[in-house]
Length: 153
Length: 153
Image 1: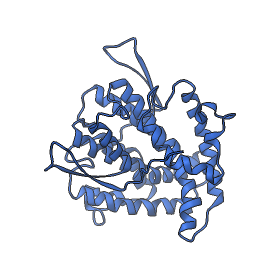
Image 2 (image 1 turned 135 degrees about the vertical axis):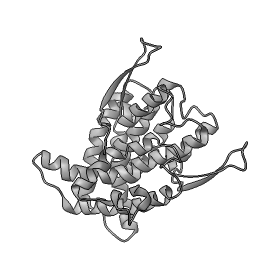
Image 3 (image 1 turned 180 degrees about the vertical axis):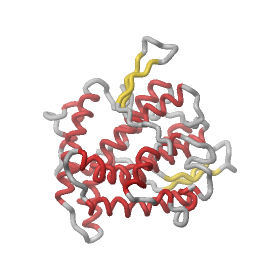
């Protein structure tokens, strides 16, 4: 699995046409959206209805995936690195919550190819960094084709 | 303080020009963005740089405010309503984290009138529902003009 590095903390962006007008951005999702929009990439849809479904998918990632997946990452990866230890009660809580949310993902992905419709968008891609961390930590929901066949594909 | 009700769980949206094309959305931020874009409202900026700063502000709300403010709300408001009780160790953890994030808000709001620049956007408004809940729960950071003069105004 190829995982793009989306852990950019701050980006200094120079637009080609306005070299004087420097834009300093933080927040990885804002940076990715800006780059995609500047490039006219279909990874950020602009047509009204497609954009609405894209925003819905971005909110799913932000509120139904990231809090739990990043919660597990903090306990299992960041805490040990800082010499602390993983609070396994919290890990179990995050994992249980995430399993529930994946039922919603399964419903959506049984109807469309990707989260925002039939085209890939950055909403899908933003699931990759923490998503790739889950299996090595023993959480194989994302790959469990019996339980969530459409999430797994 | 007037607080708009943003706790819409799902909206059935009918565009005036395409009555046949019904769009069913969930996720309050996606719904608010769609309505603002349809109405051509300045609450969702579309010019490239303004949009980038708006996305940055939306990410601040989603990742630096909502997790902590909603965490406090779950413990202090939702849990007691369901007959449970507030886990005060977690409340203290959320409150401490939020106080740290507000230093970032203070830096930004010392330079611009609103979070995404000098115009009001829905990124500011999305802080209101949980923001209004903090003071009645005894957390007055948002109103503390000595500590965070620019957040307080």
